Figure 1 (cartoon, rainbow, N blue to C red):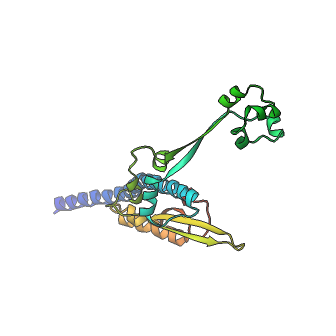
Figure 2 (cartoon, rainbow, N blue to C red):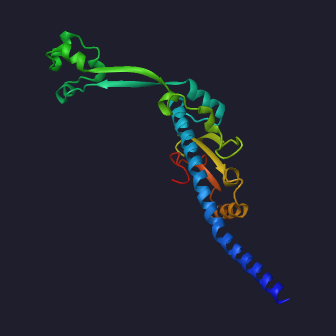
Length: 226
């Protein structure tokens, strides 16, 4: 009987040790894995933001459609201006502009203090070329279709929407937001830790996940971790 008691006591001690160890290590392991997933999701959200900003630059609005955004990045082109040479202060004071400088004739050049016209034309160049948005923002061969999918999920998509907010002065402000909830990209990790994380955010009246932009108010397209 005494031997059985000692055996049960030993098992109980081992079990208690395991519970203590588990209570310490579970949140540590959760935070370590969460940090890895957070980093991947943030990088993907930043890619979405880059694409949206360029879309807005050319269209004066954002889009709530990934199909539209991805097609834009894959097919659109943006102008790149090669600038070589600068006008002198004296030339600027005489009213010479960059646009005018590109059309000067040898006869007109003298009034701006340009004595060697051929040297001036060779050293002052403004050349516009076009490059694809995809190559400019992400590099050639970047898998642009992937920006819509949340890392560490079975191809779950980010939520994305766009709107046009009208200010009190009647100015229309384009806004967009891309987001993903904790319970989507942290799925598979400790459920209690996920619930604790969500409850903490909700108690602070904050979005329980990661996002960039905000469709309710302008925030310069910042991420909620920045």
